Each structure stands twice: as C-alpha cells, then as structure tokens.
Length: 464
Image (cartoon, rainbow, N blue to C red; front, side, top):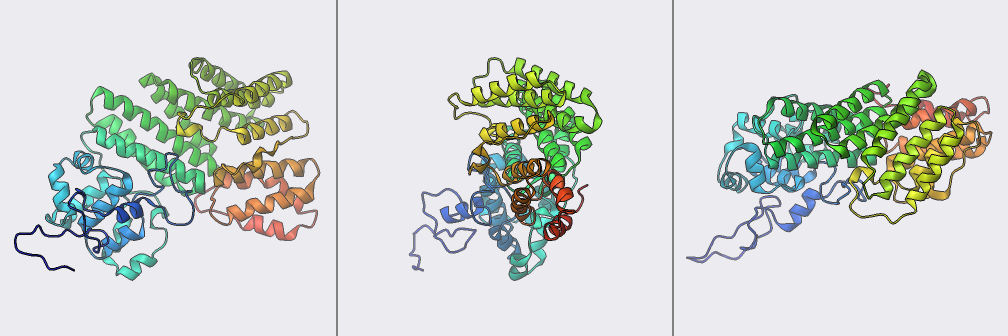
C-alpha cells in the first residue's frame, strides 16, 4: 500500500472486505463489491431474489456477515445488513432512533456502541433479527463459515416493539414481506412459516401499540395484512388450512379497517381458493362462500386495468363453481379467464400477481374438470420456465395426480418422481406432497415400490 504523505487525507478501507480502498467520492463504508455480495443470495440462480430483483431472499445470513461477526467487527456487520436490506444510513438511523452521523461512525468503527450487549440486542430486536444469527460472535471464522442454515432453524426472538413507526421502518418491513414471498415461492412454505408468523405478530403489535402518522398507519395496516397473507400461505403450504383460514380472515379485517381495496382483493382471492380446497371434505357451503368472495373481489376490481387480476378472479370463480357442481358456471368463468389473459399485460402489476399466468389458469381448469367428473386437460403451459420452483412442483403434482386418477399410472409415476426430486431437495411443501397422494395410493398395489418408499420418506419437522 502506498505510504501516506503529510497533509494527505487518510485512505479509507472497505469495512467489509478490509482490502478495497474506497474512493473519496464513495460516501458509504462498503465497496461496490461488498454491496453486491451483501445483496446476492447464496447458491446458483436468482431464486432467492424478490420480484423486483433488489431485496434478496435473506437479510442477515451470508458468508460476508458471518465473517464480520466472527472477527467481532460489529460496525461492518451493521453496514452489511443495511446493504442487504437496501436501507440508507438515514433510514436505519430513523429505525434505531439516532442520527445518521451515529450510524456512519458505528459502521466506520469510530464508535463502539454495538459492543455493549444491551445495544447489540436492541439493534437485533429492532430489525427482527433472530438472536441465533449472532452465534458467529462466539465462533472462529472457520466455524462460522461452516455453520449451515442459521436463517432457517426456527422462529425469531419475541421482543418488545418500537414505540414509533417511521417511513424507514415501513421500507424495511416491505423488504421483509417481499423477501418472505420470494423465499416461499423458491423453497416452499415449510421454510418460511415460523419466520412469517413471527414477523406478522411483530407488525400486528406495532399496529396496536406504536405511534405513527395517518399515512404511515395506513401503510402499516397494508403491510400487516400482506404479512398475514404470506404467513397464511406458508401455513397452507405446510398443510395447516385452519391456521391459514384464521390469517386470511385477519388480512380481510385489516383491509376493511383501512379501506384498502388491493389488500381486500388479495385476501378474498386467497381465502376463496382455500375454501374451495376445503369444500370436498367439509361441504359445498364453503364452495358457495368462495363464489361470494370472488364476486366481492370482482366488484372491487371492476375499474382495475390488470387483465392478469381479472383472469385470476375468473379462474377462482370457475374452480369454486366446479366445486358446487355448476358445470355451466365453470365453463363461463374459465372461458372468461382465458380471454382476460389474452389481453396485453402491463408491467406494473403488484408482485403477488406474478404467478397468475397461463400455468395457473391451466391448473385451475384441470382441477375444475376433475371436480366435475370429466378428464383433466392441461395445456403445455405447465412447462413454463418462468414458474417458481414451488409452483412448478405443485402444478406438476396436480397433473400427476390427475393422470393417476384417470388410469395412466406409468406416466403419473414418472411425473410424480420429478416432483419428489424437488421435495427431497430445495422445495419444502407438505401441500405438494398431499397433492401426490393419489399417485402413492395407486402406485402401491401396482408394484412401484421404489416410488412408494421415496414418497413415504419425505417429511418436514413441524408440518402436519
């Protein structure tokens, strides 16, 4: 390194890698490489990214952060977390109730605030960081690097809420909701359920106990509702429908209190699908309730320009109609769904609508035909490469089950074996495994012992 001359400004090193000299034009404490590393999820591909490509599917579990903690560099750990979450120093300062200059000095190592265990835990609790993520503080660098899956080992710590909610807090909570959605789509609800439930409880406590302006309060209610929906889907994907129904109801109530039409539509369509899936075992009354919910959603969305949204509403109506035995209603609604999907799609749909494409409509049509007692028919849309790993698995599982029901067992087992590859690997979705049960029931007497053994061996802790 070049020797510093008298009168020259001291060179600044990146607090993350401790190797890159920061440009004098860089006001941050991290170099561009470390910022990219903080925002890049581990593993190949972009499955861990949110739909906007910005917030990664994790916020505090990365080799870069583990290394900073293992070398006891808490200022660097704060900077790495902030980069991963996409927060500015000013936004993080607002969340912590301090000044931007204080954050800069902590990250630069000029202030040792976080070395007070009380302040460190306050920081972790404010950002809903599970305290187990601090384990690398007491490990060597090699031990920290070799510790797997710290981010998915159980619920976050239950802590007191902040007394004031600011726009910076909302920016962070939106990032968390986006992260959970991306992770659930990539790896299944069994991986996100406990974290989603804990984050939903945290935001619900904020809504009940904290101080905030009217504008922030409306956004807080929206995020609380979206997190209830995220937690509900994680529970449903974990084969816990009763818990999911309670959470969807919570989201509906929050949408009503805030007069939030977008949240209400999202909750209604989610609840409609759940009730339709429960109807065969619980009674056709639930399917009729599902039809009412789609009608209410259609009323709220009547001026919404999104063809994808109207296609999804029609598909939900079609499936619920099939569950009541209304073949004419099913045919009318599913035709309308395909017609809507043929219209030009805008680029500004909310992220939760991203799944509502041809594959979703094809699966809803096939499920509806099966409920009405006719042969399930799938278009080639199930080969859509844009599907998330979890959705691809559950769609293919439904296809395999329908093949088994209609007697094509060899092809059903072949399709189901591909789904088991996903369930034995990156996708933790008990609901998908339940979809495969008709294949398992048919494959046993037919002598597909290898497939049956694989099916019986798949399980996830804490899932019914």
